[in-house]
Length: 640
Ligand SMILES: [Zn+2]
Ligand SMILES: [Zn+2]
Image (cartoon, rainbow, N blue to C red):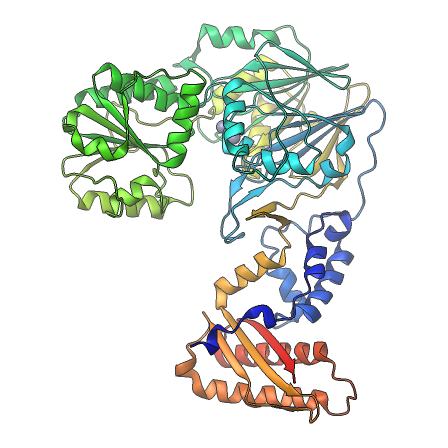
């Protein structure tokens, strides 16, 4: 057993070469640079995987699922010409998440939002993914500020790491967002302090020579704001995430007033969210959800457990208020839920009486109709409070027969199976489940993003000359373009971007063009303390290991004789069970012996790199032929 756990420090990994792969210069993105790195990697790091074509090819292909590299243009983007305005969506298009947009005017670069998204099957094991900051890093001295529209993670999640890479410019946002960012920043004590400034809706900030102002928008988190950048040809406007405060299409007076600043304004460019462009009509107003939850809290007989997104602070605050007014206690469980409630109290969005909020372990001490429980885990997340309660691994709380569980959220695409599993586990415990799909009068969830008619309203209200959709998958952006055309815009005034697209508005404000060059846009992964791009060897290895496992060969060569000192050690993880494949192993050993000893004949100086290469390629191919699997093969050749 001990032998199988042989330390991998014996594998010759050259840390300098590893680092080289991670450098975010243009060179590491262009094709030539990439190949050079690959070659070095095969000889130094020595992992191999068989494909029918050839080895280098396989390494490239295995990570080109999102085709990031195919789109990379070798031509460097020239500096901005005098008088022009440059817009670069760095994240948030081609996807939902990790929003970031840069606006460059003269000598000033203004960055809007710096979001993240969680890792997926393309980035296994990494903590989260942030936008590519290469262009900003190269133009650090021009960056005047980072503006944050609101405190959802797809807008603030990347802030600490992004700031540390782009010269730590000042950050501006409204109160709650700044508080939330400070909480997040505290998790990164090794990074420089954030220079955060709270702004009000009606404030104007001077960034270099560029004026920036704001307006309030309705979203599921308080203090959401839109950003207006003033230019000589009119305003550049982005509302961030928004929906309208409306009932049956009638927009509230407050909302009308907030947007009335656009009535006489000359809007040069609108950049906005396309997330819900597929949904007809107006979005369901949050007030209906507040009413629905209130009705349920009043009429449900037994105990109520509400699972929701911790980021829906407005809704959580409403639940606390309603429960309190009915003389019920509120128990809060789940780290992000607790943090967000704390922040809401700090920002005075919520002022519960001293003893309204109780620790989760006390929830069982109250009669069922005297307590409401707020939990994380509406997406079936493995370690969230609701999951632990559902599978009875929660140490401080247990579900009782007769409880009513309200899933106050939609299912994020990709989480369907997890949510189904949690519902199954819960229903085994004799509880009633109400989800947003349960029929009935009482709504328990509404989206935070405007539907098609909300979006149309915004277009009419802001009447922009140019339009760029900046938040959503490509399909959403195209649908949004259609809507913009319906409102009377002409096609040449609309650009549908990809991440890294460089868009420019002419000096006279009459033309908008998409440049042929792109800036680097491969997502950057935050893995522990390391930040790297999608080509990272660690991630590629994880993807391969997940597919067919690994196979380690340890060969001990006697330098004097050029023969193997003993039969090579073989280690397999996630590939085949060695005990049941003795014949395969016997053949592998024969090939190794022949391969190593043949390579050494006629050599005065033993070339370990070429022996390893040869071994890796031969064994990968052999294993594929015998098993139709492609494990990651790691040859280790040691000499004595
Ligand atoms: Zn968003
Ligand atoms: Zn949002």
